[in-house]
Length: 307
Ligand code: ASP
Image (tube, rainbow, N blue to C red; front, side):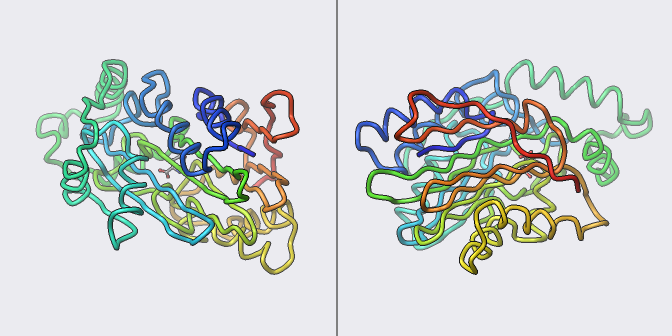
């Protein structure tokens, strides 16, 4: 079984092929996400994704193995094409769960991860346009040595340009895995980490119950530990749908700070799926679902539960 969101479109066939050929859910997810990271037409993940306020690409990714609760995560990774593979290597080669910044860079180098110029021309042009249109004349004189905080808030207002690829999969051995990859919140404060690399917020997997991954306002799902909450609600007896609804209700309690859309994707260990969105995001809250018994991959729309 595979569930991925709209960003996963170009990788879902590959992930399915891995599972059909008896591959593991870890391989299916990694290989699916690698295609999205390399695709410059997807403006929220990997090469061609959205840079931070300084015009730098900082990528986050994570993977969690539900069979043993091992997890690997990488934050603010620059200059490497496949953050998901670096995250998987953190899980498999280090005693750690998460690396960020310079250490992430050093580790990527150590495992010979593929280097790349992550800022596409389109993303650079879009970024420069936003800077021209939003930075005050005074600040422009000293840019970027100015107070960036107000621009982080400003970029949060038009936070439609966010996005993450999320994959949830169950393989023939019934191992459940969750994976994420993103260039994060477009024009965020440099060094900002969203929920995508945070185990328990942006993703969680546990073979005993299921898996969950979130997209959009990561600040919110970090504050309510959304992905882990969904699994915990299932552990306490909720169906996957009830668990997603309850986690959405937790988000409703948030009124201050960055508030906006959240989409929750979840599956249970029996292959039941649920995707709920706090807003009608049209294509951005659509998802792809494939199960063994299905002839083809289905493209579906999240159920909207208003925040
Ligand atoms: N959740 C991601 C983050 O906070 C971005 C997104 O999915 O829009 O970085």
